[in-house]
Length: 423
Ligand code: ATP
Image 1 (cartoon, rainbow, N blue to C red):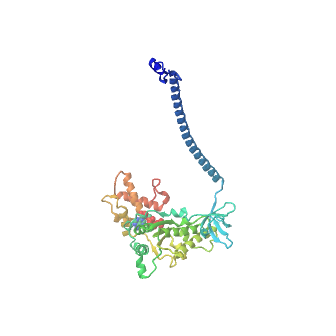
Image 2: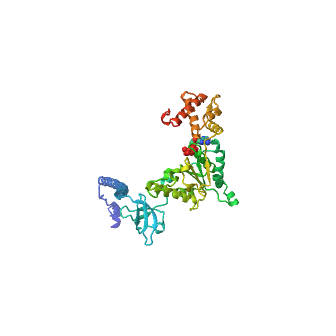
Image 3: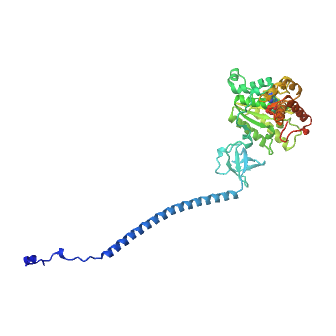
């Protein structure tokens, strides 16, 4: 039977069974399409998630920044609400741990010291901050010089040289020996076994070159130049002037070699009168005493030299003039005729002078003039030339300048000068 079935072709075979497709080709195409669109959608959604995550990170960092700003403003508001601390300086330490502090506004307080303050820093003279109500010492401030003292320091060495000074030969030699030698050649003093000079006092009428010479000494030694007008040391509150003097010397010691130039020393160095009862007079004499202590060298002075200047030697306290304070007291007289000629030639060095200008004659006509007035004559002569549209200065410009300066000397109120110009 099997053979006949094979022969006839009706034999059962799986190859011959017609397979009915499960889904139609249209449906398959549709499903494929749906699948693609779902995959696209999936991709889109993943992308959106990624974007949102990125946004979240940036929003979170923005939030953190706002939080930080909010904290900063809260602190600022807090700081604005808290009253400022009172500044003072420690004067005395008591055995029971309390301290006597003088506030910068004047009064003294017996204060406790806050727990967190490092006790080793609480020493007499230390600057501190006090609570405004309880006056408890809250903080010891870092060592800093008073702004008034630090601004006295002249950063650059002055550019005045000895050849810019007319006459004053003896004064220059005396000053060089007393100020320059100890700074530039200290070994000479060591070898000879003598103490190097500490300072000099220059006195004489105004405008005779005292400041000029001090500047030249600073230039020559390349020392730090600290210039102070003594009246700046007179302060409103008790003890402040003395503190400034202390700080001035300690700044100079720190920056050594240094030259302290105290101009118009008579403002604090005038004789202490017995009937100086006012608080102001006491404060001035306290400042002077501190200056004397510094001059005496209670504190090692190091390579610091002092040049003081005054127009009024007669009013100075004897204590300032006694030996041991200033090693040399140098007089600056008005210039002689020859010196006046040299000063005039120094100040006309850069000017174009006409042939008719005779500086010798001008020196004769300027009897009694100081260096500053001689300089004023040359400047005014130059101004006359400018007014006449010339760059060469003629003899007649000097004649006019001379009479203008003379008029100014005789009647200071009748000076015929353009506003802003002083002779
Ligand atoms: P004061 O006592 O008023 O402070 P001073 O004696 O310190 O006066 P200086 O400031 O040195 O006088 O001088 C003022 C100006 O006068 C100087 O800048 C300088 O131009 C001129 N001068 C004074 N003396 C001389 C001089 N001997 N040689 C050259 N210029 C001088």
